[in-house]
Length: 132
Image: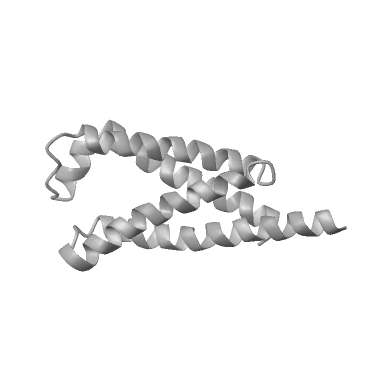
């Protein structure tokens, strides 16, 4: 994966996670009502998770700005996607989670694969530079 593509990938990830985070921090009740989902017993659980998405969005923005400098942070993005997908896929299989979470799971699985590809591409590029 080339540097321009890596920058674009993490810019998209920053927008995706950042905007979802803002939506769920500001209007979690609206989302749950709109999609007919029972909210948790306290919206703070959702808002805290959403705030973490905003933080990760900012991290992805930094990676997009300078992928070489921030390449080690990609591992944390990979772990975020693994954590989310492992939880949602487990519930999807075992408990049939509400459909609203399923597209996010698919998108995050794709992002996970692309993050791994970007991370490996930057590692290979660093190894080539060291050997040159």
